[in-house]
Image 1 (cartoon, rainbow, N blue to C red):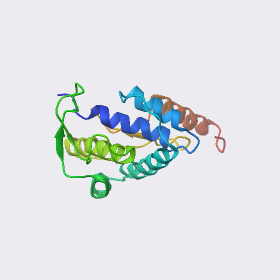
Image 2 (image 1 turned 120 degrees about the vertical axis):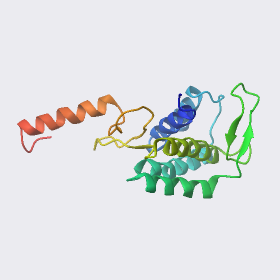
Image 3 (image 1 turned 30 degrees about the vertical axis):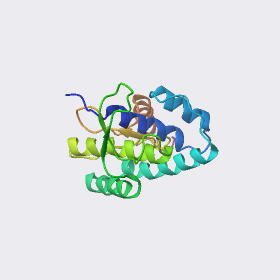
Image 4 (image 1 turned 60 degrees about the vertical axis):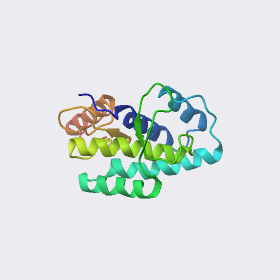
Amino acid sequence: MAFPHRDSVQRAVDLLAVLLPPDTGAADVERVLQAHGEPATTLSPSDLAKLREAARELRDVFAAADVTEAASALNRLFARYAGPPRLTDHEDGYGWHLHLDAADDGPWDRWLVTSSALGLATLLADRQGPPGGLCASQSCGKPFAHLGGGSPKRYCSPRCATRERVAAHRAGRHPGKP
């Protein structure tokens, strides 16, 4: 069976990748939202600032050293952002699904945290391990999710893994050089 929250977890990873660097703008975030099926929207400077803060808080889940730390980070997010669970269908073709926010049209930061935390918590419970991590590449550090089977990932992409292997190989042949 496919992981039911795959889309919300991947959306969280993609949004964090664009929200965490300070030099990205609202248009970058809007493009990611649209790429994940959200309707066209214009984010205000206040929306963007709140989304960046929410992204920094969500990053703690990916930075967790172990499953207990990840669960604690998720529980803090639920306590701060989530309302009572409710079922909704939005009449948008996605069918009935669980929401933890107070309204279907609530603030962007609350939506980002609650929908992401729900997916990440489900992934943690299914895997009985951290739902993701931060790229081990010192030049990257982007969050990633453990969505597939097999051993946990260390890098956000094959590109980062290859870059690190090449750098380690070169360092082995040329000590003291990057």
